[in-house]
Image (tube, rainbow, N blue to C red; front, side, top):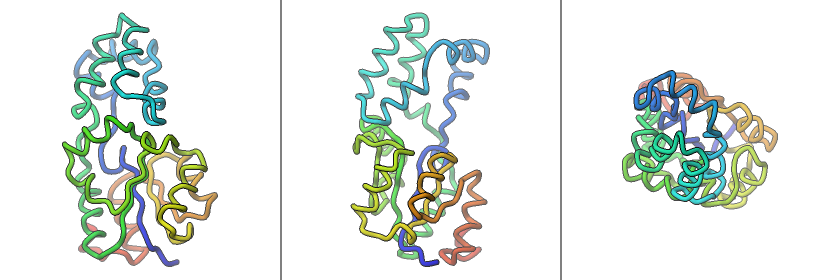
Length: 206
């Protein structure tokens, strides 16, 4: 089936998002487990991704959980250490698709204020033809409205979009709309998907 654009999620597709690993290093595994048990960390990040202000949301959570205030503030003060490293092969796939002239878009749950911090660290985030960032849109995956907004903006029929994401709920929501999808579990798996779709050669996909 024809593909007119490839859409990348960012977290765990182009940049690793493993906050537990970061906190294991900085406060130790035992403290990290207690921290994540007591603090609704991922709920805070979901609110930021949905459009809540980044620094203020972190500070509000730190004040609400003073025992963990210093750890929580690391999200604000050490963002680019937390959201890293890049996934090199995925970045190469992005570049190879662009080299082929294939439009490449980003569709990511990411805060409006912390996304530019990551762009300053990872220059490839500025190479997309179109970027759909949840915090800027006020919509978040897997809400069907965010997929509808992408379709309306790019004007490409849903069945001609190929989307990769590491979360099954996000993939399922795109599939319902008729998008072609690939559940990302490794850069190698996505590389083979692109080869099978005729978008890259085996050499280009290495």
